[in-house]
View (cartoon, rainbow, N blue to C red):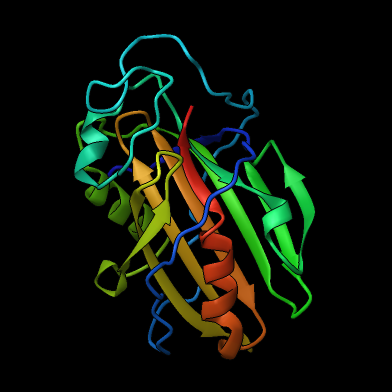
Length: 219
Protein backbone atom coordinates (compact mmCIF):
# COMPACT_ATOMS: atom_id res chain seq x y z
CA UNK A 1 0.00 0.00 0.00
CA UNK A 2 1.27 3.44 -0.92
CA UNK A 3 1.63 5.71 2.09
CA UNK A 4 0.81 9.34 1.55
CA UNK A 5 3.26 12.06 2.44
CA UNK A 6 1.77 15.48 2.86
CA UNK A 7 2.76 19.11 2.88
CA UNK A 8 0.40 21.96 3.52
CA UNK A 9 -1.48 24.68 1.76
CA UNK A 10 -2.87 27.75 3.47
CA UNK A 11 -6.46 28.83 4.08
CA UNK A 12 -8.82 30.95 2.00
CA UNK A 13 -11.72 32.85 3.59
CA UNK A 14 -15.04 32.74 1.72
CA UNK A 15 -18.68 32.08 2.62
CA UNK A 16 -20.95 29.12 1.85
CA UNK A 17 -24.01 27.30 3.22
CA UNK A 18 -25.74 24.00 2.51
CA UNK A 19 -27.96 21.50 4.31
CA UNK A 20 -25.86 18.36 4.76
CA UNK A 21 -26.43 14.71 5.41
CA UNK A 22 -25.70 13.58 8.98
CA UNK A 23 -22.62 11.67 10.06
CA UNK A 24 -22.51 8.29 11.75
CA UNK A 25 -22.28 8.31 15.54
CA UNK A 26 -22.25 4.63 16.38
CA UNK A 27 -20.17 3.32 19.28
CA UNK A 28 -18.34 0.92 16.97
CA UNK A 29 -16.90 3.67 14.76
CA UNK A 30 -13.16 4.42 15.12
CA UNK A 31 -12.28 7.37 17.28
CA UNK A 32 -9.65 9.23 15.27
CA UNK A 33 -9.07 9.27 11.54
CA UNK A 34 -6.93 12.39 11.41
CA UNK A 35 -3.66 11.15 12.87
CA UNK A 36 -1.92 9.62 9.85
CA UNK A 37 1.85 10.07 9.80
CA UNK A 38 2.73 13.05 7.64
CA UNK A 39 5.59 15.34 6.77
CA UNK A 40 4.66 19.01 6.56
CA UNK A 41 6.45 22.09 5.29
CA UNK A 42 5.11 25.62 4.79
CA UNK A 43 3.81 26.58 1.36
CA UNK A 44 2.28 29.84 0.12
CA UNK A 45 -1.40 30.51 0.73
CA UNK A 46 -3.31 29.75 -2.47
CA UNK A 47 -5.28 32.58 -4.07
CA UNK A 48 -7.88 32.39 -6.84
CA UNK A 49 -6.53 32.93 -10.37
CA UNK A 50 -8.26 34.40 -13.39
CA UNK A 51 -6.01 33.24 -16.24
CA UNK A 52 -7.47 31.02 -18.95
CA UNK A 53 -5.65 27.71 -18.72
CA UNK A 54 -7.28 24.35 -18.04
CA UNK A 55 -9.89 23.88 -15.30
CA UNK A 56 -12.64 21.41 -14.41
CA UNK A 57 -14.66 19.92 -17.25
CA UNK A 58 -13.22 22.41 -19.76
CA UNK A 59 -13.91 25.56 -17.68
CA UNK A 60 -11.41 28.38 -17.45
CA UNK A 61 -8.89 28.38 -14.64
CA UNK A 62 -10.67 31.13 -12.71
CA UNK A 63 -14.08 29.42 -12.92
CA UNK A 64 -15.48 27.38 -10.05
CA UNK A 65 -17.07 23.97 -10.80
CA UNK A 66 -20.62 23.50 -9.59
CA UNK A 67 -20.26 19.92 -8.36
CA UNK A 68 -17.20 17.89 -7.39
CA UNK A 69 -18.18 14.23 -7.37
CA UNK A 70 -15.46 11.67 -6.83
CA UNK A 71 -15.53 11.06 -10.59
CA UNK A 72 -15.13 14.78 -11.31
CA UNK A 73 -11.76 14.70 -9.60
CA UNK A 74 -10.20 13.10 -12.68
CA UNK A 75 -11.01 16.26 -14.65
CA UNK A 76 -9.32 18.66 -12.26
CA UNK A 77 -6.24 20.43 -13.52
CA UNK A 78 -3.10 19.27 -11.75
CA UNK A 79 -2.10 22.94 -11.36
CA UNK A 80 -5.31 24.13 -9.64
CA UNK A 81 -5.65 23.33 -5.96
CA UNK A 82 -8.85 22.52 -4.04
CA UNK A 83 -9.01 24.37 -0.71
CA UNK A 84 -11.43 25.09 2.12
CA UNK A 85 -12.97 28.50 2.65
CA UNK A 86 -14.42 29.09 6.12
CA UNK A 87 -16.17 32.34 7.08
CA UNK A 88 -15.62 32.94 10.80
CA UNK A 89 -18.34 35.59 10.83
CA UNK A 90 -20.86 32.94 9.79
CA UNK A 91 -19.98 30.64 12.71
CA UNK A 92 -22.17 31.79 15.60
CA UNK A 93 -20.64 31.02 19.01
CA UNK A 94 -17.45 29.75 17.37
CA UNK A 95 -14.10 31.47 17.82
CA UNK A 96 -10.93 31.21 15.76
CA UNK A 97 -8.41 30.04 18.36
CA UNK A 98 -5.39 28.82 16.40
CA UNK A 99 -3.94 29.00 12.91
CA UNK A 100 -0.89 26.93 12.00
CA UNK A 101 0.24 27.54 8.41
CA UNK A 102 3.09 25.03 8.85
CA UNK A 103 0.51 22.28 9.38
CA UNK A 104 -2.10 23.72 7.03
CA UNK A 105 -4.65 23.76 9.85
CA UNK A 106 -7.00 26.21 11.55
CA UNK A 107 -8.74 25.56 14.88
CA UNK A 108 -12.13 26.82 16.02
CA UNK A 109 -13.70 26.39 19.46
CA UNK A 110 -17.30 26.71 20.62
CA UNK A 111 -18.84 27.64 23.96
CA UNK A 112 -20.11 24.06 24.48
CA UNK A 113 -16.51 22.76 24.49
CA UNK A 114 -16.36 21.63 20.87
CA UNK A 115 -13.05 21.95 19.00
CA UNK A 116 -13.00 21.84 15.19
CA UNK A 117 -9.82 21.62 13.13
CA UNK A 118 -9.92 22.40 9.42
CA UNK A 119 -6.86 21.09 7.54
CA UNK A 120 -5.73 21.27 3.93
CA UNK A 121 -2.54 19.56 2.81
CA UNK A 122 -0.53 18.77 -0.28
CA UNK A 123 -0.18 15.02 -0.84
CA UNK A 124 2.93 13.56 -2.47
CA UNK A 125 3.88 10.01 -3.36
CA UNK A 126 0.34 9.30 -4.58
CA UNK A 127 -0.90 7.84 -7.86
CA UNK A 128 -2.48 10.78 -9.71
CA UNK A 129 -4.58 8.39 -11.81
CA UNK A 130 -6.23 6.83 -8.76
CA UNK A 131 -9.92 7.67 -8.40
CA UNK A 132 -10.71 10.22 -5.71
CA UNK A 133 -12.94 7.85 -3.75
CA UNK A 134 -10.19 5.21 -3.63
CA UNK A 135 -7.66 7.89 -2.70
CA UNK A 136 -9.96 9.12 0.09
CA UNK A 137 -10.50 5.60 1.42
CA UNK A 138 -6.73 5.12 1.42
CA UNK A 139 -6.37 8.35 3.41
CA UNK A 140 -8.65 6.93 6.11
CA UNK A 141 -7.06 3.49 5.93
CA UNK A 142 -3.58 4.91 6.54
CA UNK A 143 -5.02 6.66 9.60
CA UNK A 144 -6.31 3.32 10.92
CA UNK A 145 -10.01 3.71 10.08
CA UNK A 146 -11.98 0.77 8.62
CA UNK A 147 -13.31 1.88 5.22
CA UNK A 148 -16.49 -0.13 5.72
CA UNK A 149 -17.49 2.40 8.41
CA UNK A 150 -17.26 5.41 6.11
CA UNK A 151 -20.33 7.44 5.15
CA UNK A 152 -20.78 10.04 2.41
CA UNK A 153 -20.99 13.74 3.21
CA UNK A 154 -21.77 16.63 0.86
CA UNK A 155 -20.01 19.95 1.39
CA UNK A 156 -20.82 23.18 -0.49
CA UNK A 157 -18.69 24.38 -3.37
CA UNK A 158 -17.96 27.94 -4.46
CA UNK A 159 -19.77 27.11 -7.71
CA UNK A 160 -23.07 26.66 -5.88
CA UNK A 161 -23.08 22.86 -5.89
CA UNK A 162 -21.71 20.13 -3.66
CA UNK A 163 -18.48 18.16 -3.23
CA UNK A 164 -18.43 14.52 -2.17
CA UNK A 165 -16.50 13.68 1.02
CA UNK A 166 -16.35 10.64 3.32
CA UNK A 167 -16.80 10.70 7.10
CA UNK A 168 -16.55 8.55 10.20
CA UNK A 169 -17.23 9.14 13.90
CA UNK A 170 -16.72 7.48 17.26
CA UNK A 171 -16.09 7.86 20.99
CA UNK A 172 -13.24 7.44 23.47
CA UNK A 173 -12.26 8.81 26.88
CA UNK A 174 -15.54 10.64 27.31
CA UNK A 175 -15.24 12.59 24.07
CA UNK A 176 -16.86 12.16 20.67
CA UNK A 177 -15.02 12.83 17.45
CA UNK A 178 -15.91 12.93 13.77
CA UNK A 179 -13.66 13.29 10.73
CA UNK A 180 -14.77 14.34 7.25
CA UNK A 181 -12.16 14.15 4.45
CA UNK A 182 -11.61 14.14 0.70
CA UNK A 183 -8.45 13.37 -1.24
CA UNK A 184 -8.09 14.93 -4.69
CA UNK A 185 -5.66 12.53 -6.35
CA UNK A 186 -4.78 14.43 -9.51
CA UNK A 187 -3.69 17.77 -7.97
CA UNK A 188 -2.51 15.93 -4.83
CA UNK A 189 -4.54 17.64 -2.10
CA UNK A 190 -6.29 16.31 1.02
CA UNK A 191 -9.01 18.35 2.76
CA UNK A 192 -10.07 17.34 6.29
CA UNK A 193 -12.46 18.59 8.97
CA UNK A 194 -12.14 17.02 12.42
CA UNK A 195 -14.34 17.89 15.39
CA UNK A 196 -14.07 16.79 19.02
CA UNK A 197 -17.00 17.39 21.38
CA UNK A 198 -17.68 16.52 25.06
CA UNK A 199 -21.11 15.00 24.36
CA UNK A 200 -22.68 12.89 21.65
CA UNK A 201 -25.77 15.10 21.90
CA UNK A 202 -23.98 18.04 20.26
CA UNK A 203 -21.79 16.15 17.79
CA UNK A 204 -24.12 16.20 14.82
CA UNK A 205 -25.22 19.84 15.20
CA UNK A 206 -21.73 21.20 15.86
CA UNK A 207 -20.22 19.25 12.96
CA UNK A 208 -23.02 20.36 10.66
CA UNK A 209 -22.45 24.01 11.56
CA UNK A 210 -18.78 23.75 10.59
CA UNK A 211 -19.42 21.80 7.40
CA UNK A 212 -22.07 24.14 5.97
CA UNK A 213 -19.48 26.93 6.20
CA UNK A 214 -16.51 24.90 4.88
CA UNK A 215 -16.94 25.80 1.23
CA UNK A 216 -14.69 24.03 -1.28
CA UNK A 217 -12.95 26.40 -3.71
CA UNK A 218 -10.57 25.69 -6.59
CA UNK A 219 -7.65 28.12 -6.53
